Amino acid sequence: MLKDRINDLLGQVKDLQAANAEELEALRIKYLSKKGEITSLFNEFRDVPAEQKRELGQLLNQLRQEAEGRINELRESMANANANAEKLDLTRTPDPIALGTRHPLSLVREEIEDIFSRIGFTIAQGPEVEDDKHVYGMLNFAPEHPARDMQDTFFIEKEIGVQKPTDVLLRSHTSSVQTRVMTSQKPPIRVLCPGRVYRNEAISARAHCFFHQVEGLYIDKNVSFADLREALLYFSKEMFGADTKIRLRPSYFPFTEPSAEMDISCNICGGKGCSFCKGTGWVEILGCGMVDPNVLEACGIDSKVYSGYAFGMGVERITNLKYRVKDLRLFSENDVRFLRQFESC
Ligand code: PHE
Image (tube, rainbow, N blue to C red):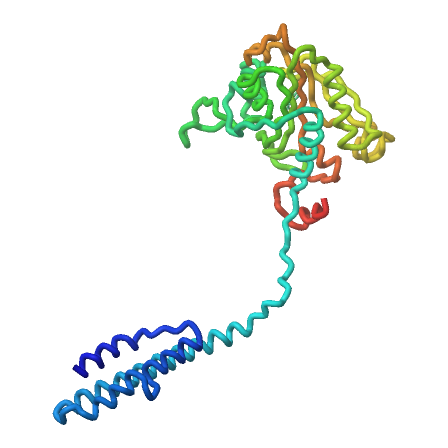
């Protein structure tokens, strides 16, 4: 039946698709050319009985209109797509992408890690949220030691809003990573512990509530203070130049005995005395000492067989000396005018 075939084609032409000009032309030929399907229906229409002419004639006209409409629509959308494609100049060089810069603290931390890795240190990491045992208890801090005071340490309340005694805290030094290594590994141990630490200080140019440390620990048979001094002298010369001198001054830390603080000859005035070193020619850069036997024992290491040294330094302090960054706040403000100055480093 002619009517069925017209309806059939009506259904087809509604969603004709063409991917390019050739396909579109093929559709035109298939339906609308002299030998096309719709044209041949018009030829058959001549033989239709008079009483059906009106109905089928309308239907056939509708079919031709819809087919032409759809093909024109496809032609237009193809022309628009081509016009847009022409606007894209694919040969143009792209705008330069603004590259980020390395953060000065990362640069310095990596340099410290690199120097110590050359004498056999590997990197160890641990959690920033710690417990009292790893930060203080096993490190020979007496129970009432003032470092545990709320002024220095951020304690974490177990139940929000309920102030209760708690032993969950933010580590105040990365010596906590050393206790974790000592309790999980057997000597010889030679690790570097870089990481962020927290202390409850008011934020100013000279203090911040968090900063970064690199601590080191070496435990083996017959490790001596002379070994410690040699390692630190090597580090200082690599970091600040071959002329750098060091001096060790007696000090106190609960976890080392004997303990010392180390100064390097001021790398700004070369040791002559300037405002940076307050005229002394020396600047302090780290704390160190021989691991206290109590700490070794608390961590399950036989202090009659093994000895060890430890040291700890602030990455901000070393960065200050290397790059003269005087205000600690600059390190955490993410001001691109500051960060961009390290572009070429
Ligand atoms: N843990 C000490 C601090 O945070 C630094 C240190 C490490 C001192 C190891 C001696 C030995 O200040």
